[in-house]
Image (tube, rainbow, N blue to C red; front, side, top):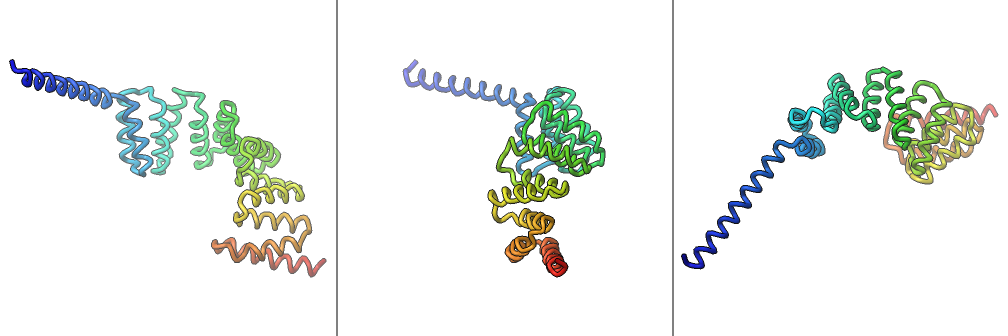
Length: 255
């Protein structure tokens, strides 16, 4: 046999071997739950929720214990506003992975959306027990604030700030809570912290002005509101600012 023919046969053999190996890899991937899950993550990122659900169901048919697929399936159902299916999927995820703090948070959010506040609190506490981070602290702070438990809300929002000292949401919530507790100078400091991080955050500017009004710093409140008003696009917030400016006029008259 000529050398060229031998070389050609060897090359063809190598190509066929590579093709066979590649085919095995593809077949293996097609039977891999993690691979189906990763396809679901990609399609979810593109907003293709129904497509993602198909991949996740395939992943779970290949591996019924793939907790990440149950979790993402729950999030997909949340996007579709199918909260009963979402709850069931995330509960199944937590049966398989009880220390998954993000899943406890997501389940708590579902319970909040369905007005099951005691259950939501339980889930957030479980998440906090697993991971004492910004997210778990802030969720508890928001829940307690919504339920009127201001001391507990303040405790957890301060924990959130300890974990993320640049969170404008946490500083703003802390300011609102302190204002409701009548601790106006501390409330003012908290809103000022927000505006140091983001000087254009109009909501914090209005909240700061309210704290000034409560602390009887009427000139500072008026100056801040007049400065903020032209920057605001939201009509309701504009109307609220105008209401407070009128209120300041009345308060100064009665002074």
